Image (cartoon, rainbow, N blue to C red):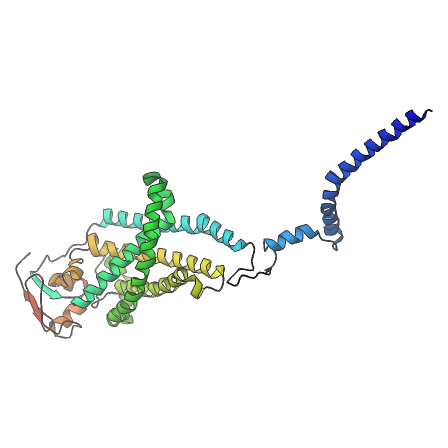
Amino acid sequence: MSNNKQSRIRHHRMVVFSLLSLVVLTLVLPLIPYAIAELGETAGNVANPGTEYWRDVRQRDRIVTGTTQVRGVDTDVLINVTGEEWRQFRMGQLAPYGAIVLGVMVGILVVYYLVRGKIRIEAGRSGERVRRYTSAEMTVHWILAITFVLLALSGLILIYGRWVLIPLLGDAGFSATATASKVIHNYGGLLFAAIVPVAFFLYLKDSLFNLKVDAKWFLRAGGYLGGEEPSAEKVNAGQKAWYWVAMLGGFVLVASGLVLDFPNIFQQGREWLQGAHVIHTIVAIGVIVFFFVHLYLATIGVEGALESITSGHVDANWAKQHHDLWYKELQTGQGGGSASEEPSMSGGSHAGGVASPIAKD
């Protein structure tokens, strides 16, 4: 065989060997760690270093922190997987279930109104008024009510706005609305935090439960489901329940809201913010549900109820029908908050808790 022919054969073999080597290097070698991992899982004693590395980065099995020169909360965590878990819970469970609860309560109130209608003053208006709330009580009530409504609306926009408002306002319109809602929610929350303790102590005395009276009221559902309306003090059992829901819920909302507003002061990690947000949302939805009931009964549900907090006075027959024990105390001069004489906004007055006549409505 000639030297040229042998040289061509060697060259051909070298080319084939090089190509095979390239295939091995590019295709086979990267698969070796996975093969080792598979064998390791079978044998129980070998792990894939690459898999373990990314498992630690994603915090899948344990909490792993890194090293950094930046000092702060969670600065040594590369990827915080709890944030994605929180997002999925918020979008997949918290928001939808909250919407269902709110919608069910609105539906119940609509059906109840269609069936029951407005609860009228059975004896008609007497033309006499008695003072129910002082100017201070009305002022605190309206500050608390207006603040709560603004916070509730802005909070609901932040949770549900993308589904409800984007189709109506477009992306730009929703962005502006959401930004305004965030500002209102953050700064309104500070006013809410200041007024809740004032309301708590101002209304506390009349909102303490009287087991003997209030148990009967609850057993009869206040007469709202039919039957004779049970006796009640100045604040009936349902209103007392609303007071405790609003006040205790208010304190929880304030505490969780401050954690969210000032994360650099209160948080010990992102989990604190995520937990505060979940608690804040659940409690807020619960309080809003009770607020719907309170708003319904105070406006279109019960005749004469709204004027008690707009003028501070109620019709004497309204007081006898809904708060008979309190009305009896007024007649004997024992009614709380009615001992001093104060002119009525409707033209009448009371002295010592006894109703004085005014012009017929």
